Length: 183
Image (tube, rainbow, N blue to C red; front, side, top):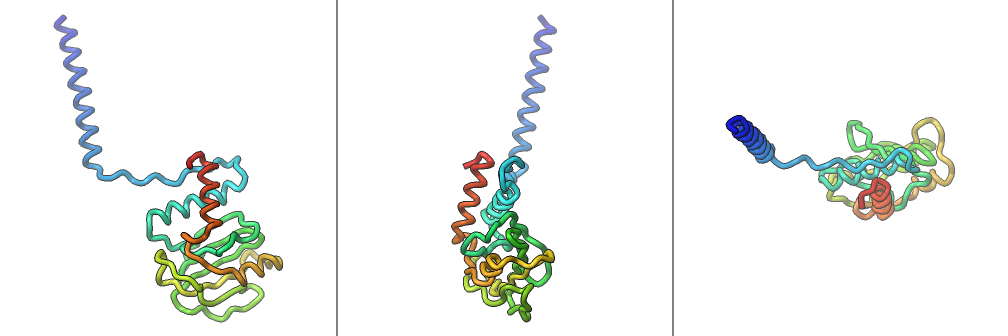
């Protein structure tokens, strides 16, 4: 009987200590880190693009986004990837679709635009609270191959909008969340 009582008291003390330590740790660690974006299974068609969209959306929702603060008003032809590239003197985003297009946003006017690699260079034509210092855009092909006529025309003439106004991107994020099992 005495042994049972000792064991019960020991178990209560250990469990109580664990509970107190856990609670103290939870209180002292501060706020939990926000969860990362959901994961789209590799078996889902266009999973890389969907995962890219989720990562961009998560960054935007946390605030302070620079990459993809502006997007084309319409979805680029054959879009398969969206990647931010770190370069000096501006923000550069890579769109992989019917062509690989580097889009660079800067505060200052860009240099000379030399075709056929340079498809567009000039004012963005929109303002974004997410990237208020960016005013100019240059779109150039990369990867060696020139874009087809459809892609070249798209990048030369597209309007730019803040991420919150790009309905195609919002639709892509919704599709990605559905594919990842989160609505």
